Image 1: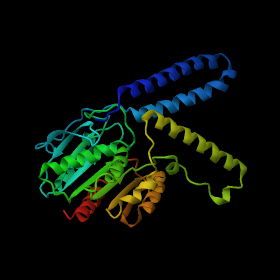
Image 2: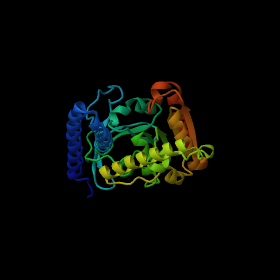
Image 3: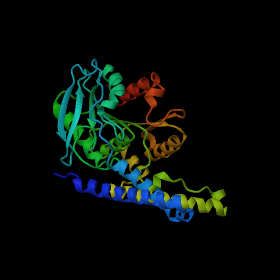
Length: 324
């Protein structure tokens, strides 16, 4: 059985605490003399980057959340293992059309935060599996890997659905949010049983996804070219730091999303930057992809921003893709 040992968490926490102590010491020095800002500012920025990487790799667990009694009246809390052997927890809500939708939450959340999505999908007849990804909720694990190993969780959850006997093997879909979108995308590459995907808030996984190439008309401008190089170096360092904290090296979304075809894929993008990214992802996914743009919605808040249109579109997509 492959699990992430606690030593990685302890190592990462030690690095963070050492830098935090150094930043506090630097703060006392810069208050005494402005010259210390020359080394204080880089140390503060490094501490911020390490804190950000630590928060992504080891998010706080959300184990409990108020339940909607009408939704969980016939719910089962189930346990199974990811494909790499990690014990996972999920809630199962039975439906009546023989099809099932796996719901994968965002970073720092749990399956219970997906109750709004579960409600309209269950009302449409679908069985629902609200999964706690590794290092989240009641599932095991100490490290979140931005979808790399969470793909094993999604594939294991699909294996569990197939083992139940009340689900049509040709009618399984996944709806993932942010981290869950990464996990669902990569999980679909491991399980052909996933026949349709809705991915909301799908973000960059590698430096190749994160930075746009410099426009041709700006390449001759020295200041903007220098700024582009600085931004690239900072983003590259941030990416390498996160990879060090997680022990994983995510492949770019644009390099793997095309392998989903010909399975139907609906991307939901909120906000201008996310829309720009998802246009690139949808182009790489080829003809199997449909993009829904919500320019005024916040990240992973499509349902809150479009409470009527969102259920209609998602249910219609799954009904068509799964013939449910």
